[in-house]
Image (cartoon, rainbow, N blue to C red):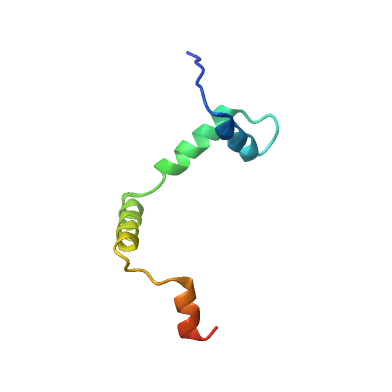
Length: 72
């Protein structure tokens, strides 16, 4: 079954920029994006969530701070 979906002009422009070749379909692009997301392992998902939590709690160090400590 084939169906159509509505997307914003902005999203359409993003999809156009993602095309590897002119004849690549939007369906192929969307399937690639879905596949990439599904490939994240459970461990990776857990690490990403932990990192987000650390950022929210202020447990990170800025690039500027690292440069200052290393005298770069």
